[in-house]
Amino acid sequence: MRLILFGPPGAGKGTQATAIVDALSVPHIATGDILRENVANATELGNRAKQYMDRGDLVPDEVVIDMIADRIAREDARGGFLLDGFPRTVAQARALDEVLERDGHRIDAVLRLLVPDDELVTRLLRRAQEQGRSDDTRDVIENRLAVYRAETEPVLGLYRDRGVLHEIDGTGDISEVRERVLTVVRSLEPAA
Ligand code: AMP
Image 1 (cartoon, rainbow, N blue to C red):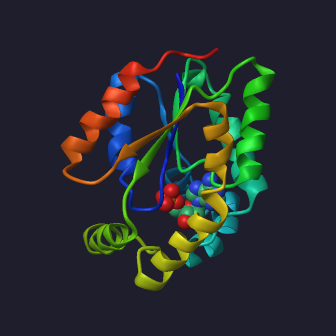
Image 2 (cartoon, rainbow, N blue to C red; image 1 turned 60 degrees about the vertical axis):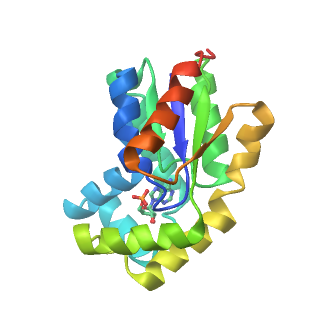
């Protein structure tokens, strides 16, 4: 299964990803996590990405596209994967299609977590206190949500047109959302 977990910052993607990868035994590939690891290790990639991440802007497409192409080419992702936080622009979605098509693969499903804006801000401010992520301040949060609306939401149209978009209510307890997500995951059939 080749899946994408989609939703704005604070929708619970990281939390729900754990349940999905456990159920399917596929790797969880989160661009935000890979980028933060590179920042922490002060790699060339990390040094390039940091300024964008600190502002809540997107890291340039070519940087993340190359990073994801390398990651999904690895052995553990051959049989499938769960992408979290990618694609975030239409250009990234098209590049992903090209990479997959080379091997005759495609995305089986996109799971979109729906959470109202006021709830997202509350959750992100709570995470700021609990985890101290440097991009969880109010100004940066507002920019990340604006960037999501402007650059990331348009990606949904591509997948909706293909009939692979599944919308899931992301409000309520973590366990309730998990049940909804797993119900959709169990209903999926691999495409190719
Ligand atoms: P996340 O942990 O998914 O919220 O990502 C944290 C930050 O990493 C984002 O605010 C962006 O600056 C950067 N980032 C993560 N994924 C991407 C992506 N697919 N394209 C561009 N920037 C990204």
